[in-house]
Amino acid sequence: MSDDPEKKYWYNLRTGEVEFGLVSPSVDRAGPFDTADEAARAPEVMRARSRAWAEEEAREDGWSQTGSGRADQ
Image (cartoon, rainbow, N blue to C red; front, top):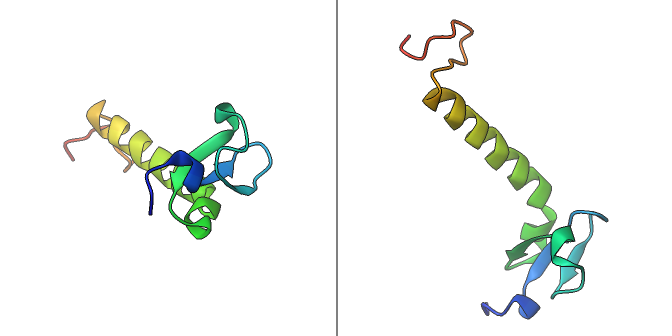
């Protein structure tokens, strides 16, 4: 598909709707996505990425998910 943002799908963070093209202000958009289905999954993808980044940061800071507080265990 084209790299033109006018020809991509976006997820509107304010309304929760999928939009085609640059309909809403940039502050309200997540994307771009090649398909409407991908755009509709934006909240799920953003949660997963946020969780992964938080876990990575915790590992880098020496925190463990096991509850011991030590990353070397």
